[in-house]
Length: 152
Length: 156
Image (cartoon, rainbow over all chains, first blue to last red; front, side):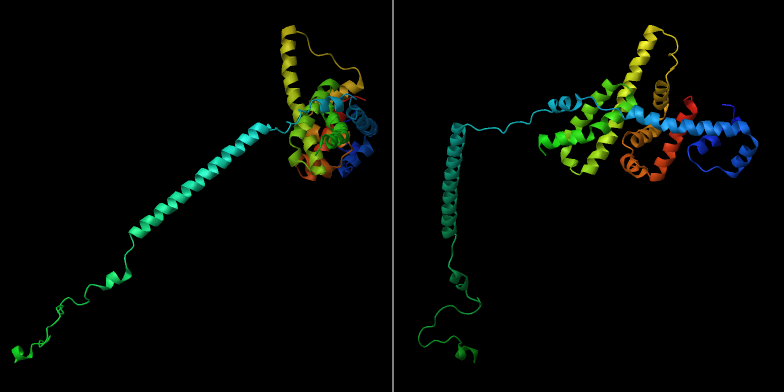
């Protein structure tokens, strides 16, 4: 390339499709070497894009898909529980349930017995006299609660 | 999804995945290894990738990432080999394709990812932006920078 070094950067931009600035246009009008290099860079840019596409758009090898699929780890098979184990588990579970229900009934019975033992009649709280200063003895015949004669 | 459905997904995306890996790595055998790794990872994550667009974006991102990781490993191995061999400087590529491939390999990975996405399946800036999770304008600007570097580095 024989272009003026200070214009190389802008020449490359222009070759890649950026708009040509006014100062560059003025320079190009006066510099044949830069005009030539701009044309060369434009042609190179077109080849460059094709070259990049050619390099990276290569077909994947036919072995890629089968190789990938064969490397997939097999899914774990669903675990089967032998019938005998399942039956044993059911028996154990049933036994546990029966024991649990029996214990629950016993607990309820004991609770009921405790409740009966602790029961008191509601009238018992009414038995104490509301006013202890009041005479509680029953007067005999001829007597009175209020000894009027004594008071007089 | 059953295995037949997954096979259909692999066939629909093998060109994209392999092309991106090959673009980063250059070597087709290495790219095939990476492509297989990408699909196996996708298989394990299928539950979260039911949307086809999401799947495409995910495998594209994963292809670039895994290929870059492998390339870093390969480069380290190559440096060890070169030191062991005490060889001279790498030979200058005479062929334009080789020169172009080397120039692509020298691009910073942000520029190279955009270039590959747009070149492999002719993605537009919007789709590449969605895959790389950057604004459209960033994709356009990176693509321009990538092409400009190649233009100035690779001979006529």
